[in-house]
Image (tube, rainbow, N blue to C red; front, side, top):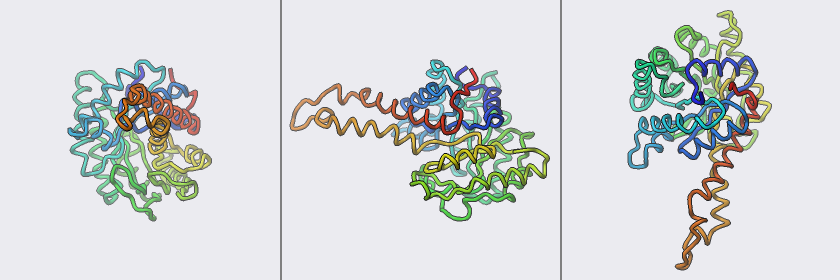
Length: 340
């Protein structure tokens, strides 16, 4: 059962929280990067999450098609076939979906899952992220209520964000200011609006100084203790320990100590994108520099077909990215925890 059923996905998240580890959620943009993620999970003996952003889904559909739903659907169907060959369980997820892309991405994908569930099938994706960080909290939570109800009927777990992640992803820029730190008041308002699982399960991306992109250690001022404050504020009111299943966004440049502290406060999923992009591209750059006169027909020469065959550098790219996925599993303590 390589692609998680809704029940298995819930079990994965429960096991992570109880066991003090988190799953790497690897952004992919192609069949090659998907295979690299699956290979990395298998080599680490870790279950995991594969996710696609709006820009990634558009890219997957083809440069002239640019249809996010087509690209996301194609990825999910392809993943179902190739994942069968790997001895781990993987959940499929869609990443940040802002308000202006809901009707062209998240809502139609949920509709596809609703139709599948009506025929006795599993949903197309196991979870979707609503990113309401760019709108006022009240509007964010109103939209979250509507989407959570729809996700619950489609047997999908919803992810939502309160607070703002700085930096840039898919052309969306988050300013680096005090909004990078979610407040206990924000968390209490969230619990009041969407419940704590009784209206549908959701993951919460609360911010504690997170910034998208790549930065040198020390540049990003993370305060993992913010997550503890949120959990205690809501947990104290509702009599529930660590009531939120938390997500860590924008982790590049974070120290291992900060990552482990965040996990101890209930983080069960950490997004990995920038680091795996580099790990995929670095071997390709190495191949091109080392085989300059083979990949190019210099001065009218014939070049070297073996050098410019995409498989030659594609294999190296897959190996480089999969090694970084293994490292992520080790950092997040999910290595060796696979269900099957």
